[in-house]
Amino acid sequence: RVRWDTWPDTPLPADTAAGQNPADGAVIDYYLQSDIAGEIKLEIHDEHGHTVRRYSSAPSAPETLPANAPEYWFANPPVLSTRAGLHRFAWNLQWDYPATLPFGFYGRLLDYIEYTLPDHAIAGQTPRHQPPGPYVVPGRYEVVLTVAGQTYRQPLVVKLDPRVQSSQADLQAQLDLAMQMTDGMASSYKSYNDIASLRLALAERLKSLGATSGVKDVADAITALDKELGELADGTNTSPGFGSINRDLARYLTMIEGGDTRPAQSARENAAVSCEALRKDLARWRTVNSESLPALNKLLERHNLTALATMTPPADPVCK
Image (cartoon, rainbow, N blue to C red):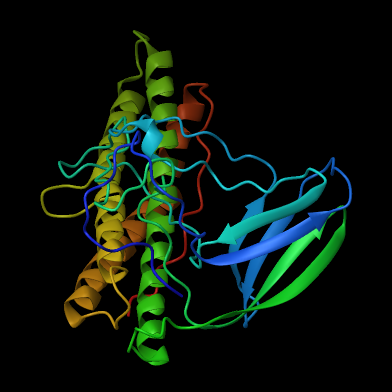
């Protein structure tokens, strides 16, 4: 369990000739006797049966937002080969990357992905998703390969870097806090995007009203709800919204994953503040779906307009 290069050297330009280091992480070899027409899946399970990571032969959806860094820096998405023969695949010993919003520090959603490329960036190999997922703790894992309806299992043991002096308990505490943060990022990510969809629907309803007379009540209700949703998504001067919570948790996750050590008390306190803010926003989001939205739907139906679908907000986070 060795972390990716953490030496703060200057990245080599893409046209500089350089040797190739061994693959980072656990090297997994698999052999296919013939070409496979269907999908191949590879999963990593921990000793409790939790799925740590999933890979597939199906290519992932391309990133639609541009980056503020040249494309040649980024690694291609990991995809399993379905061709006959011997194949080598590397798992980077990390959980899946968290759901991250491109939310800027000035309180708005960006129309591009803002990268601060690490000093140790490598052309063609730098992970596109930032922050990456947290590192697994040393222990026993299982590699599960599914091909043509058949499942194959092999054990895998992750050992601690002998240079690292942190205890298993320290690393588990680090992972526990990191997973709390990634869960919060998933909740804020889903909530932000659900609100964005609802606001689009509100705009469509308002547009359909046009200059129709006698609809001021419903127009005012739509405007008021949209304002409340904007505050929930983007926050106010006194209360963070789902976007800024997601951004802050991404920053904290990067900080605590910067080394193999038990998280500092300040990191726990910052995570707790974001967790509590998320809990309050989720409570408000539930009120919108249980009270504000049904009340607006009654007005919409009175004017022969299609009602808006209510949504199910995520469960409350566990704040520790």
